[in-house]
Length: 149
Image (cartoon, rainbow, N blue to C red):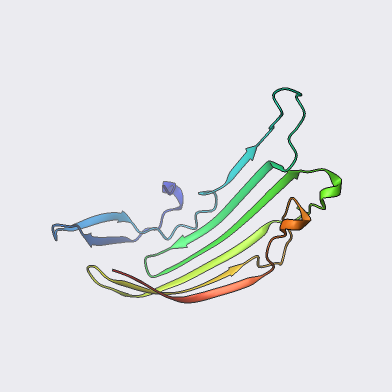
C-alpha cells in the first residue's frame, strides 16, 4: 500500500477477466521510501539456563526503495544483521548488503508480458555472516529476459 501523499497523479486502465475496462486508480510512480522497512529485535535465550543463544541475529534491518510505473521498475534493497556470536566464530557483520533490481517491460498484451531485467547483488561487496565457515558471496550480477503468460 502506497501512502496517498507520495502516489503519482497519473491514472491507468486495465481489463478484468470478463474483458471490462476498469480504472485501477493512481499510477504507482511512488518511490516507496519506507514501504518496506523492518526492524526486529531478537532476544533468544536458553529457557533452562537463561543464556543468550549464539548464532542468532539480535537486530535485523531491511530497507527498500521501490519504483514501478508499469513499464520501468526498480528496487534498491538493503539488509543488515547484528549477530550474537562468540568471538572465535570469526563473524563479520559491519555492512549493509545492498541489491539493485531493474526491469523494462517492453511488451504487454492481454495475457503475455515480456521484460528485460538486470540485478546486482551485494553492490558494495560487503560482508555479513555469523560464522567464517558460511561467508556470504561477494558482488555478482545477473540479467535476462522474463516472459510471463
